[in-house]
Image 1 (tube, rainbow, N blue to C red):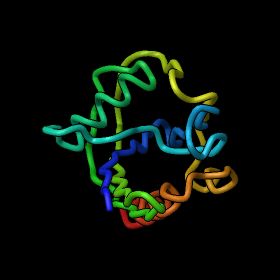
Image 2: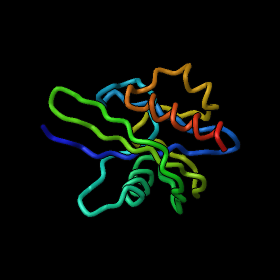
Image 3: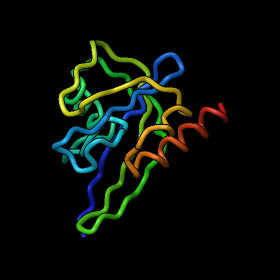
Image 4: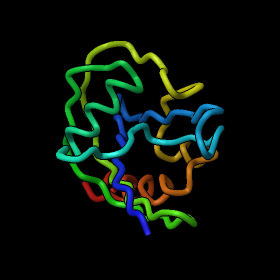
Length: 133
């Protein structure tokens, strides 16, 4: 079975995190997620995350810091390993290129949104790290 390695950003700003709504062209259309995408051959997770955020959100000078957790989801045709990384700084105004909406929420408020299944354990790991700091 094919394995796909994917990265996601938990982007922080003033005690809130960014979640984005998947567009109608995506699987899980309408679900909310942490933005990111596939790790290409030869990329580190941080390099992949920076590239994906530049492509998806049109932001630059992205500062990726701490690894949060990995979530593994098995689908009929593939296994997805989704790594979450903390992003604490960037430049530019967010412009959606493959999402229909985004919002800044507290980690607790994020639970009120229809989150993609692979993102739920990442949010839990993030919340656990916040409470242990």
